[in-house]
Structures are given as C-alpha cells and as structure tokens.
Length: 147
Image 1 (spheres, rainbow, N blue to C red):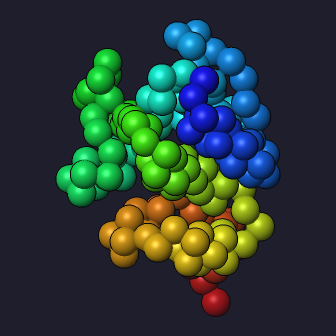
Image 2 (image 1 turned 180 degrees about the vertical axis):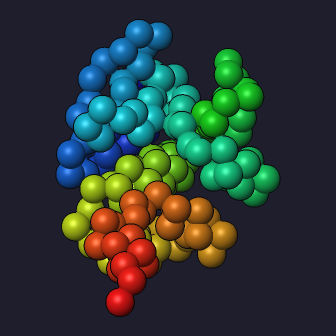
C-alpha cells in the first residue's frame, strides 16, 4: 500500500467504532458497525457509498468522481495521486462516517455542528446530512399528542 493509503488508514481507523479489514481486489474496507463507510485499493483508489443526493452533489461540485464499475449507483471514487490528495480522501471518508454516526449519536445535532466546523460543509450538503438524523420517538409523540 502507498504512503497515502497508510496515512488514511491511520486517521480513519482512529475514529470511534471503525473497524478495518482486508477485502478482495487488494482493498481495505472501513466499517462503522455493519455499514461500510468506504474502501481503499492499494493503488490509492478510494470508493465511498453515499445516498444519491449527496452523490450527485459531490459529482456536480467535482469533489468526487462517479464510481468506475458501478456508475449508476451511489458509489463515488476518488484517486489519491499525490500526498496532498490524502486529506481530501480523509474528508470524503469522514463525510461518509458522519452520516452513519448521526443515526446513533446521543446528540446528533451537536455532532453535526462539530463536524460542520471540522469539515466546513457547504450548506446544501449539511442540509442533506440533517436527513440522516433519526426522528426521535419523543419528538414524534409531541407532534401527535392531543391536549
């Protein structure tokens, strides 16, 4: 594996709940629980799944590329070619990580604010991530209860 993919592994594997395992096609797979947040090929190809709205946003803003083998899915690709590309690859992996972390966070709104500061999210992208926050039973109950 290249130096860039080793730096990426060091960073991503330090995030709470992340497991790293080898996978076919010379890949390291990164998971948060049962969800794959992305995988990295030994040549520096970084493949990350996103919901279609986020996928389309990333492609439209040239932040990632369409996945080379499954282009009509939510998967994206980013190629680490130079050492400065590693930070961008980490940013993309963190974006994937956040959307799963929000689902189980004790205070997802606070987590999203912290991540917004860390990643400097575009407002549209932040709005899309907000959709990953589950509706709490207490909030639904408050909306449906009749006084």
